[in-house]
Length: 255
Image 1 (cartoon, rainbow, N blue to C red):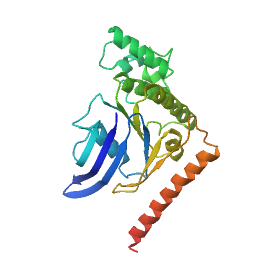
Image 2 (image 1 turned 30 degrees about the horizontal axis):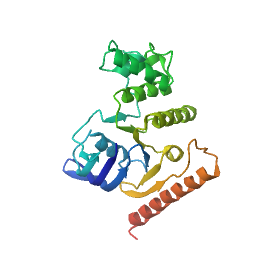
Image 3 (image 1 turned 45 degrees about the horizontal axis):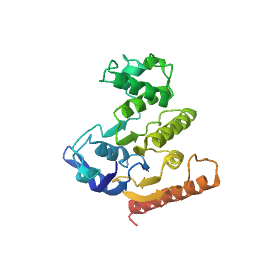
Image 4 (image 1 turned 90 degrees about the vertical axis):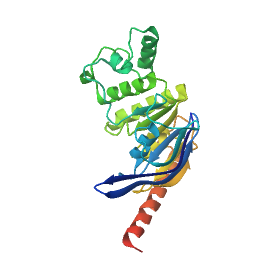
């Protein structure tokens, strides 16, 4: 599924004060593309993702999936939060099935397949309190995939994890993306993560959030973080951040 974001503006109004969060956001994501969105804290990355998910429809502009305007949350848009949000009273397999019955043979088969895909075989009957943070997040990914979303939206899903677990789950996510060909949009504050995963990196400036640049990452998978080509792209993205920072300093000083 393709995603189109056109002339999107978003503001919050509290106690008659208007705070502009997003300003004239424009970009497109092609079918099966993996796009990451990075930017400073508070630039509106997560807000933008929620608009695409249909979780907030108070904005100006247009957001479309396959040329159809988003009317609200839908199974077309799978959403994964930074916190796994599992039900503590349900086992792994029941958390993945959520409101669907495991007695249904189609659901049962699909849940078993997803448990294999996210590498949780043997933990089907475990409860969230018995899982590590990384395992819990894999359950959340499987739950989102069960409904075959056409677009997967991920809001810093690995941000709270240790470096080793985060790296492992990045590889799990890439495997899923390559198998399923699902269109993915991931918000992150991690520069290396954005380059490691993405076909293109969308760079946003500080509030009000605007797109300062979109950088294609023309590297084959699997990517080596220590490789020269990877480091060249890293420097390119980092340089763009430095430009954004300099511009903000100039604007803030009134020069």
